[in-house]
Length: 156
View 1: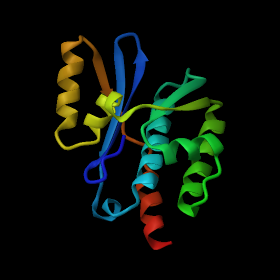
View 2 (view 1 turned 90 degrees about the horizontal axis):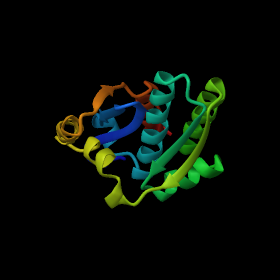
View 3 (view 1 turned 30 degrees about the horizontal axis):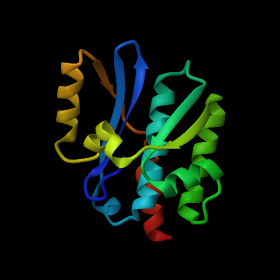
């Protein structure tokens, strides 16, 4: 999930009682970017972080509450140049790791953990709830290309 004003966050099952998660905060350059591009970048960068960590995974089911990001990922051919570049990066990362993906829509109200992770103070809330459930967590950095992708969008 993406918060237009703070950052983005995502989580994935890591096996057993382990959760993998990522959350990043927007810098000044990213704040003004279009929300649809931010949602797509967040989904792609987070998925890449997860499949980089779990090399045994061959299939991924991704969820987003942003229709534009969902459609871009389904069709792999969005109209906007910046989104096309993100999808080119996505395709290369999935092919490199031989991972298949399916994107599905999740209602915003059901996207609780990702929503928390995308907002100020939300990581602490997420960690408290995971601990209360007896889950182990591992924070992963999002794939590093995402800031450059958003910065290039500003110049283009």
